[in-house]
Image (tube, rainbow, N blue to C red):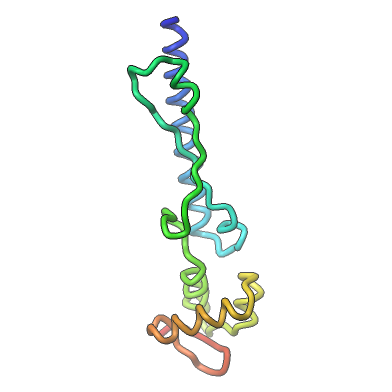
Length: 135
């Protein structure tokens, strides 16, 4: 029985290490990517270390949990507004609404709202009708 508990602890440690690496890779890839597929699945993998004194049978049930993060609680992930603003700021000559729409797959109303709020707050400039650039 002691060997089983030790093996379970080793497995838990290995899983924790692997899942931490996966989470780091996911966060890095989301930060580097402007693809909409990255935001469609906001899932964070976690391993609950549990109580060391808990019996092995109880530990096995709650070892691995998959928790979805809420929109406001995204750790390291960009909001839709941040993605659009970042895209506009990275374009040397600015971007038009059609290009933003094509790259993000957002509908016209969503892009209009994001761009309007960003323009009013001074995060982007308007250089012509439907063409936006960094301030």
